[in-house]
Length: 188
Image (cartoon, rainbow, N blue to C red; front, side, top):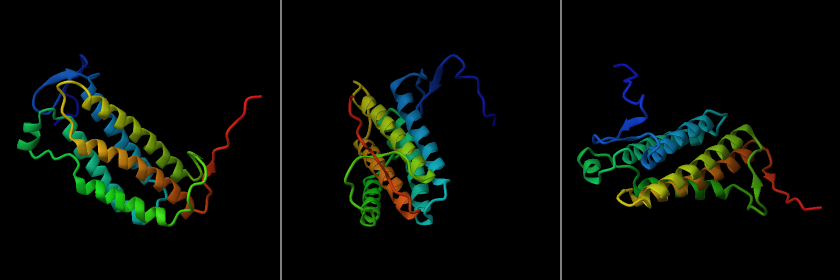
């Protein structure tokens, strides 16, 4: 199988189910942002990461792939027929449990923090911001008349951005690197 088909050369792409749409369509932008998020989670996971998080991050990447597949399939009946599940409530619960477990080992926040500290934390902060962009794209798609997005997709992305923030803080703490506190600037 060739990697290139030339079918997209004029700016159109195929959705699962046969529809052809512009590559700038809201649905394509949404699953494209989720794909980009998945890549950034992979970059963050490739850092000198707490080994206890590796398996969970691979599970998250698989869930993001499932989410992207769901977003690439506009017809809910088609998703059901072909077993395209997207993300489940259990995926959200697993993220919440990990957030709770990681937060137990962190000092409570007393101020806003800047993205940074260790390389691992910085990578997770980037993944967090890409997650928020993907969330905005999926929210926009869900608000579009005639479009269908599973409610669990929105909850998953919202919770995942929280987890990525907590992992960034966890990695700084694990490596003995302080979070970078935001210090407001004054006019003058």
